[in-house]
Length: 108
Ligand code: FES
Image 1 (cartoon, rainbow, N blue to C red):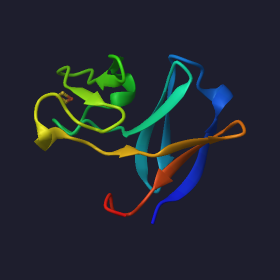
Image 2: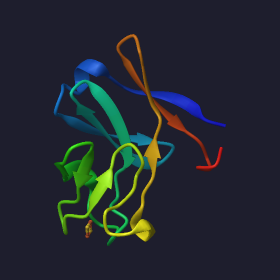
Image 3: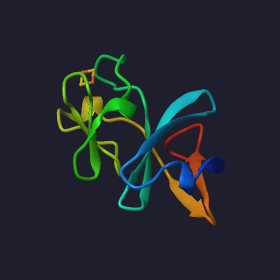
Image 4: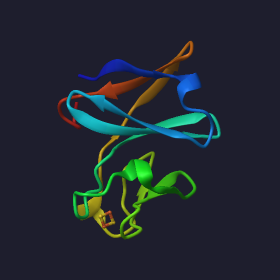
């Protein structure tokens, strides 16, 4: 079951900006793209060292700062093959609060 947690205020992340938060011990990067918020697991699955918070936005995606693998912010799909797909999270905005959905299993 997915539970939603308030992680930031909308004013904390203006359009084009990003913020890293911690959710149940996981580092999660929140991106604001033209007023829409996306949340992705922060650690790049390629070498597991690079933080995607430092990546370059590319459409509705982020490119890892290390080797440029691109991750879709809606689906978590990687352009270098599904073994590098990563976790994305549901995001809701309620009033001026950004809520991120967390489930212990991605199948919930
Ligand atoms: S560490 Fe992210 S693409 Fe290599």
